[in-house]
Structures are given as C-alpha cells and as structure tokens.
Amino acid sequence: MSRQPASKREHFEREALVHLDTLYNVALRLTGNASDAEDLVQDTVTKAYRSWDKYEPGTNCRAWLVTILRNTFINQFRRESRRPSKVEFEAVQEINVFEAIKDRDPEGTFFRFIVDEEVKRAIQDLPEEFRLPVVLSDVEGLSYAEIAEILDLPVGTVKSRLFRGRRRLQQRLYDYALEMGYIRS
Amino acid sequence: MTGLWQSLVGKMMPSPGGIDCAEVMAQLYEYIDGELDDEKIERIRGHLEKCQRCYPRYNFEAAFLRFLKQQGRTKAPPELQRKIFKAILEEESRG
Ligand SMILES: [Zn+2]
Image 1 (cartoon, each protein chain N blue to C red):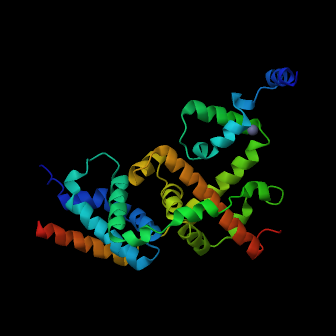
Image 2: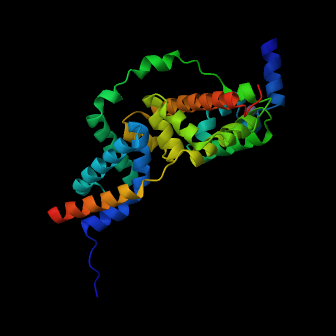
Image 3: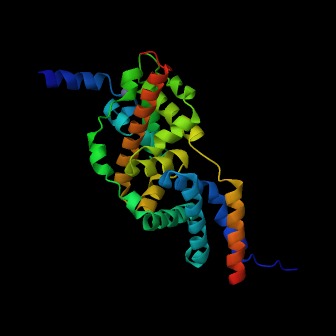
C-alpha cells in the first residue's frame, strides 16, 4: 500500500507555517503595530505559497520566508522604512553599561525587574539598521550568516550592527532601570 | 628597556588560554552566539575560566542575552493563524 504523496499545501504547512511565530515577531518589529504586522504576515505567506516551487527543500526555510517578508515590507512600507535614522545613530553616545554598573550589579540582576512591555518598546525604538539584526539574532536565534542572507549584507556589517544594537538596547534598559529605581544610583 | 621587561613578564605569565584580554573582549559576542570554531571556543573558554577581568564581563553579557531571548517574543495571534490556513486553502483550490 503506497501512501498518498503530500500535497503542495500539506508540504507548505509542515515546512513553512511552523515559522509563523517568527514571521509575526519580525513583522511586528518592522511595522510597529499588530494590525500592519498581521497584514504583512498574510501577504508574505501568500507570496511564499505561490512561489513554493522556488524553495529548495532542505535549505533554510525560515531564512527564505523572512527574506520574502522583508522584501514585501520594503515594497509596501517604503516611506516608513526610509526614515533617516543614519544621522540619528551617529549622534547617540554609546556608554559601556557593564563598566557603569560592575560595582553595583555585576551579574545584571536588574534585567529581571524590567517588564516585557518595556523590552519590546526598547527594541521597537532602535533604529531599523540595528533593530532587525537584534530581533533576528537575539529574539529569533538566527545565525550571523542567516541574517546576512536575509538582509543582503556582508557578515561583518551584520556583526557590527548587531553589536551596536545590543549596546544601545542595554543602555536604554539600564537608563530605564535607573529611573525605576531597580539600580541604586 | 621597558619593552624588554614587558616581553619577559609576558613570557613568565602567559595570557590564560593563550589569548589576551583584548582579543577575548573583541570576540565575546561571537563566543556567546556560538559563531566561532572549536579551537577558538576552547581558547576563550580556557581564558574565561582563569581571567578575573574577563569573566564578570562575559557573565553580564550572557545574562543580558538570555534575558532578551526570554522576554522579546510574542506568539502569532490564533486569529491570524486561522486566517492564514484559510487563505492557503483558498489558494490551493484556485490551483
Ligand atoms: Zn581576560
């Protein structure tokens, strides 16, 4: 008795739709709101299904999907994505949070007091150049090579944006923790 | 004279793991992210075990990244999942 070969839809559901949470999270960071994020994910999934023959089985499906999502975003939300954040990111002075805090809280226990919503806001407020590498790496756990592929950037550029994004985020959360009194000043 | 003295000290007290602090700091995130080859990982691990300057920094950065991983993620709303499965079924019937 031979089994019915899986249909294109079944195959797609099994391989691609398991990454729905990833797509939704990335979309949320890109668009900044739930309703646009849902539209973006829907458009992405439909496009991905239509070009499913172009996906090579065994390659990285998640990276393939996020690439489609990003391209869809750039095409549809072009104006927002061209925010001039370059100028802004030169201006911010980056401090080393560990150096600032090592005598008071070297283990970084203050992070645990920071609520989920504040972290999401802090990520959302990163300039886009930094936000995507941070989301893809630190929230979704993608490798530098996968991120480089998705963003169409050299690995070295991904690294430097990721590291700077992390420093920014750390600094923002540190400032928040100081303000909230989670760290004695 | 100073240079000679430093190189002598350097030979007597080699950097832990055969790698110096600056190099470890420069590659700290890559180390935590699992982006280095086995040999590099071993050297950095060896250094961190012995170095009282680098270890606390490593510990702090690792705590920060663990924290981000736990906090940052949202689940796709069930309503969106339903819409998507429905859209794909429609695509399928369209052929
Ligand atoms: Zn060291």
